[in-house]
Length: 167
Image (tube, rainbow, N blue to C red):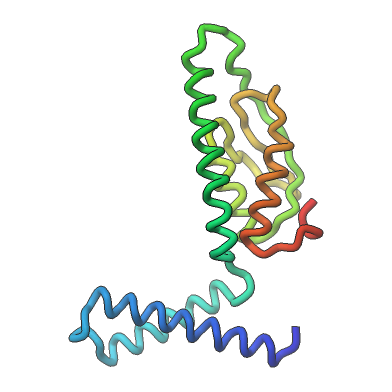
């Protein structure tokens, strides 16, 4: 990306963050709370946020809104599946094990993916080494790797990573 486009991205992102933080400050402190302390605090917060989360490397809010129904549906279905297995009189209803998945997302998208895997019932991100994610599952006979591949594609969209960058 050219320097000029990159600079404009920082300016737009910084202005938006400053506006949102200033509005947040105003809501919390009220009109009488606006002072030089507010201006300095908002400015410092914007500078830190730009440093820690540069423009273009963040989550896409609209894609996240599209991800939430998928996540909620998977959580609900998974919860009922876990309850069914736990209450089943069959001894083979639960067959725990591990599997390894070669991840394609990187950075914060990878952290997000690992967190979502751990939040979904019946799975837990255990270890990441050399681009391979070790996952504990309540039933290693399920097609967990196919499920994780679908989840990874959805996470890549949320974080704006091109599909070609994901395995």
